[in-house]
Image (cartoon, rainbow, N blue to C red; front, top):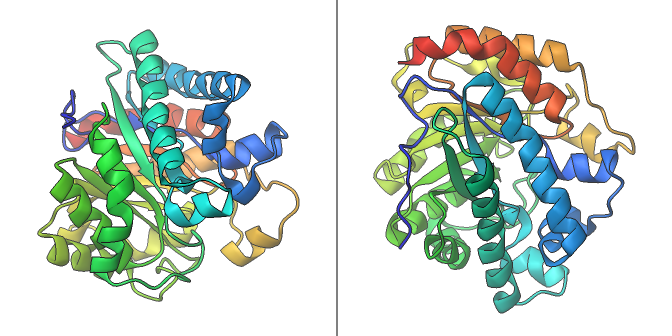
Length: 319
């Protein structure tokens, strides 16, 4: 069973960098066709693996320059049973992809990790349904059983943690946290929020985090916000509130558009990278517990570079 080599990136006074919007970068900037918005099929192609190595190295260099850590997130966001079936892949295919994805991350880490830039391998888990809509209702138990297959595969690799991205509802997040706990690997749960700062179900972020902790025995290592512009959730954060201690990371969108508007877009809205960095600096100044920072839809190395250029001064406050 995997044992993480480094302390998890929480409460250590060190910021950890995440990459940006992998899929939007591949589709809109690199012109790569991704059926079902799935990046994991690239693992099976020599050119695809080369493209992914180059992508992660670009972000690793930002982390090294910023004297920050780096979380290497695998390409398993769509590598689950329902999305795999859409793409013609069975359980054996998906297990091989998830294992190979971590091996690729191992290779990158072995080549570029430094003492000042520790690198954590994360097995990415996506939602059963759409990351913008709460359209796949499951109980906590159903979500645990559904996602356990992918989580158990990651637990048998060198993955240090598993990260559930774009979770739209509490039940799926709780099921994943429980499955990871049972597999013996730390988990991170990241919730999608709308322009009002609430989950697509209408539940508040505070309620969702507290409910996952209650259902799982506080199993997640920490929680994150993803897939929303910083201005969409800044007003729902509560300085000094206990639940805020559980919230450590941000993967924000470059665009201020709603999810419905983004779905209808045929061109990339990449916002303003410099403003993106400034908004993150404001958040980390007020909430130094935000130590895991990256990007989501529409972001690339420019946005993440600006975040770390402007947020580096807040890192010491998190100690």
